[in-house]
Picture 1 (tube, rainbow, N blue to C red):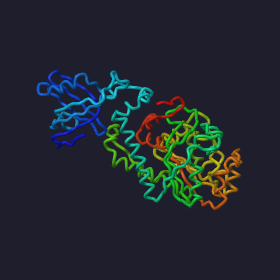
Picture 2: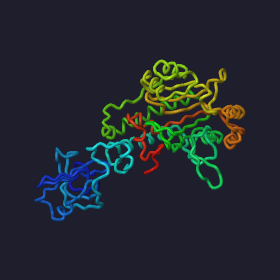
Picture 3: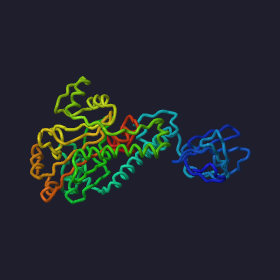
Picture 4: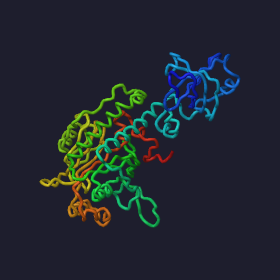
Length: 424
């Protein structure tokens, strides 16, 4: 686009709107930076310009050159009077989706033509903020001397056991899409890297079809040596607050496009609520039965979230409902050093201090009904000097969804994969 003091400019973008008032024609031209008005006085315009604008459809890509002058009523306070107008790519009409957003469209329709949906400033703002969120996370971790790693997404064994796996044909072998980089980032602790993170896809073959579940998601995974679960909660809290601060400082235009007038940065420290107390709160507030040892479903999460009213941790989970790699308390092995970071609406992150002792890890794998032989590649590093370590994983889509008050997690991912959607 152009700056207000530019006298002569060339713009290239999409035709956002067309208005023909007889003697005057107005074209609103849009690119990722905003919208500028092109004004064509038909009595003064050249024959070439008049011929070019005939029948130009909305969302066609055009290139316009001309003089810029101040115009208080025009978008951005300026307009362009064209000396040339070229149609670079003509759009079919009618459009499958109204980019101007005058006609509401349901989410499925929007996702079917995501390339058009993402032209909407409101939708583009979500993904510009998502990009800024991931940038802020990377900056935060790099400043603390973390090493970014990349782990396999095709694996031979489940991270946590169970059946929530996508099997794939891998030559003559059985293989799966990875549920989490958990096992590999722990193996990097044995390699002496001490602080690692990965931002990448994870795959869960869950048959949920809710507003907060995806079958392919982006996970922000962190692992740290010589650290416990308290260290990880502190680090995670700082990362979330810093990320919100970054968005508040750098994304005001995008927040305005989303009509978010007051963007609230969470305040620390986040409350640490023991699991036993969370269950008591939920039991008093929801109609469905819930008892100690049950996982927290959506209704229970909402009930506790309403009580807490801000970001908080649920700590000290029963070992029976956490993965085999969660470290049990020495004085009460029925409880483990695990935590979840919660937004009042839903879970954002899960983490724990990990078991680093080989014998204990093997016994916990067996206790979960799994075979240690299936995890030999993972267990082997624990026999050759594994430091104490802890970590967490954060769902990027849930973080963006709750940050921006989106109603459906599919709004926070460009091309969602869920129970029914495999294209585009």
